[in-house]
Length: 110
Length: 121
Image (cartoon, rainbow over all chains, first blue to last red; front, side, top):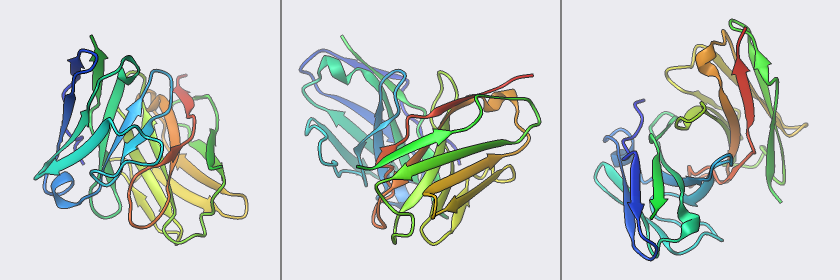
């Protein structure tokens, strides 16, 4: 169970769109439509943003969207806002009831 | 309202066994598809998945930690317990429990606030 690969940091100006990739293998990201994304502000518990590749739970802004192609899933934040500055983690089901997280991406709003 | 709350010792000594309790409300671990999982996060580092127990009492563990972990549930008390043996300073982390709400998803939709555990002599 190696951690999924995410860039350490991504930045953008207010109003811009940014995309965070999450790369795994055919045993996790590529093998299942079970990728989730979480937002974590400093000192807080993670919050679910996207489930099952592209489903947005009730209450989550439609500025957040998810997709997947092959072994890479992506989170896109459109209309970047100051409050989006946080750490973002992807997670994938990885067979036999196990899960794996990404290394995390720090989003900075310039 | 669904809530989860972690509890346990803030400080443990190396080689000791850690016991953490997740107490939840607003849902039942007897409901088909519902699962509770444990996840940890060392200071300044990434999330790491540890273990999961489902409504049917099936248990799943991180491959790298499975020899040290035991997860169990007490549905009458709405609690899930995680034990981790042979604690080491590298196990210093905030430990979270979270819920998977139904069968057709694997997303952790509600998280506890986390409990910080320091391993030090």
